[in-house]
Each structure stands twice: as C-alpha cells, then as structure tokens.
Amino acid sequence: MGPLEQAKSALIRQFETLATTDQQASIVHLQTKVESGVDLLAWMKGQPVYPQFYLRFRDEAKTVAAVGKVRSFSDVNLAQQFIQEHDFPLVGGLQFEGESQFIFAASFN
Image 1 (spheres, rainbow, N blue to C red):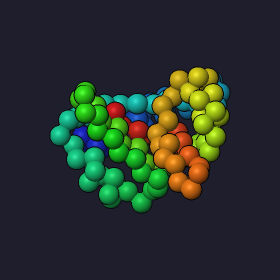
Image 2: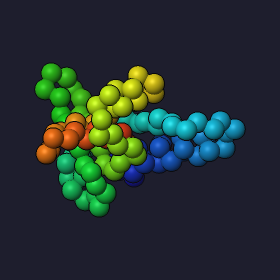
Image 3: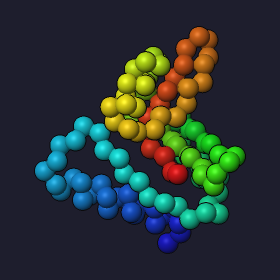
C-alpha cells in the first residue's frame, strides 16, 4: 500500500470511529500525515474535484494540498468569524472581479 492509500485508510478509520460515537458535531477535523517525497501536484492533477489549492511554504518544511469545497465565504468578515469559532484553516482568498473567495477544504499538511 502506497503512502496516499495509507493516508486515505487512516482518514477512513478516523471517520468510522467518529461515526460510531454519539457525538453530533456539525464540523469535524480529521487529519493524517503523508510521507515526504509524495508528489502532491501529480496527485492533484489526477483528481476530478475542484477547486484545487497547493501551497509549499518557503520558510518551513510544510506543504498544503487541498481539493474540493466544504464551505465557502465571499465575505472576509464571515471567513474570519468562522476561523475564530472553529479554529480551522481556510484556503484561497484570491480576489477576482472585486470578490474574494475563501474555502474551507480538506487538506494534506
């Protein structure tokens, strides 16, 4: 089993564990680590889901790759409120034709 398949299996186990508990959270955060050396850009290219986001940090050994959209915000104040309430990362924020779009998405760190 390759590193991406292992990550997928780990996330599925986390989700199944969460689904069998009595907790009724409206938003949950599942995460796993992926071995370094995995070509996330190639992985993203093979995904049919949009939007897609990729960021490799310059000053630290961290990469974020995200596909799909869970929730989106066109108002920066609503996006900031969401971050403060849930402590989840948002990706995006590009301005196009006067509007910014912030997306809460599943991601690999």
